[in-house]
Amino acid sequence: MNLLGEEINLIWVLLGLLSVFIISFGGLVNYWATFLPKFVHDVFRYGKTHKSDNRHGLIRMIEIPKHYYSHYYIFTLLYGSALWLVALGVYFLEVPAPQFFLRFLDFVGTIHRTESTSAEGAFIALTLLLVQATRRLYECLHVNVKSNARMNVLHHIAGFVHYFCVPTGMLLEAPGFQQEKRGFQWMHVQFMIPNVIVVQWIAVAVFFWAGYHQNKAHQILSNLRKGKSSSSYSIPRGDWFEYVSCPHYTAEVIIYGCFSIILGIKHQTGLLIFIWVLINQTIASLMSHFWYQDKFENYPRQRKSIIPLIF
Image (cartoon, rainbow, N blue to C red):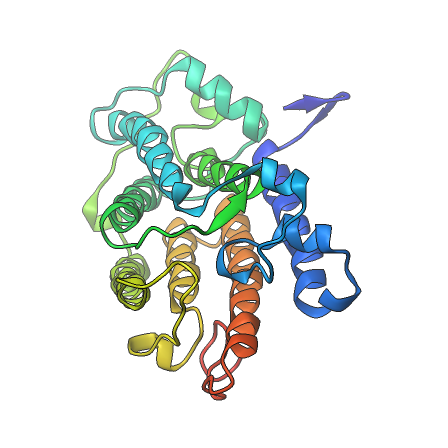
């Protein structure tokens, strides 16, 4: 993207803005809550962490049900699948990426993008993202218990920005999708299983391990809510809940860490995505952790927010 004569990586800018927003408001809400006007709390807090149902009238006007989270995963499956089909054509069918798609990547990621991962890394990461989105959509529709919890539309927009940046960012630095690969002669790029290194296989295994525990955490939370009023909460117990308040956030960080490892340390966009997810999940986990501590006098003191025994 060209802005005032300068090439701007739109994906990096969006991830940076999201990170700055979550650090600024999250830090204020988590650690200086008593000094903030109520409006700031109403903007940032959502779901059970709202300390009052008496929210600002303007915020109420832009609130939507929290279970609209499912929209993120529907979008990811539709948009991500389109990108996955393009990658499938490039890496398995030797069909060059369409020129309009390369121009789109140039627009969001600059024309100076360079190859920094393997065909195997890019395709596996994109495939696992679709696996993750499919599981999360299933959980939203069939595991999670719907409640009256709400969030403002800014959180909803941030979710869509995230799920636009992730699959797009994975291909920005993938073979066959850079400026130098274009020309009159097609540069041969192919997915080959023997090229998948041991570290990538380990990351794939860890991805499914983290996904299993994330699903288990969502099931535990749902079982606590079944048959109860929307304002009734209990202390979750079992599995990773014995160590952290938000194991589903812990699992999310691990999952995106696996994406970054599969793409490789040279894949800068993949690393930035992981850093953004780490920041976001840490701030969100602290907000829930402090809420649990305020809500329950007998809340287990040994539990951390997101990293067992540490933080």
